[in-house]
Image 1 (cartoon, each protein chain N blue to C red):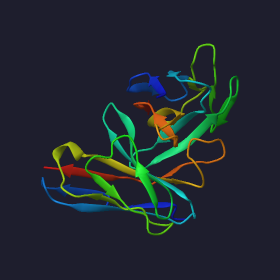
Image 2 (image 1 turned 45 degrees about the vertical axis):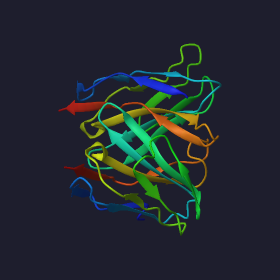
Image 3 (image 1 turned 60 degrees about the horizontal axis):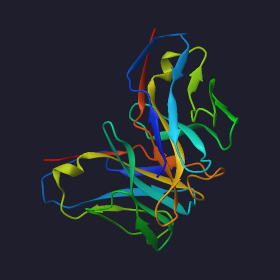
Length: 116
Length: 115
């Protein structure tokens, strides 16, 4: 079972470049989320989606865009990369709201991004 | 919003030692509590959870009890193995201002078990 697949695993960008982090899940989950993980700060929610065509902002959305055209895919776009966006990015999915009792959140292996 | 505070690492233990990783929370109402584990090079995995006071979550020899009176959810294991080396995150349910139910994570505690 593939679960949640993220690509690429590593990426180096120059300031001002754009790129898309890919996330795909094969579990038919409605809920998907993007997090960033920074030292000493835990995981912070960037954007989330509750189904195809429905996305919304999390805690730290500035500088990132998302879309959800299919249930399976939830790409994260950096329009103009900045050094402050150097981080490890995780995509996650769940059948229902991730904080509720019966909905386990599954994570991808992450994308390590460096912006120079 | 809700928040969790967990002990800083790294924690280094010898194999078969007893493990405790402390976690306390601040929350309105009665959140669900979680422990996630992140093995090297992998994403987070749910280790265990508890949804109401006095519940005990358990999995793979790890346990944690939801203590409302002390607002704590400490992770314990009686005998750690080298394969338990990972980063452990305490987390709780929370809501964004718009009402979306999300998970708020602690900063993580790195555990290293030496043979």
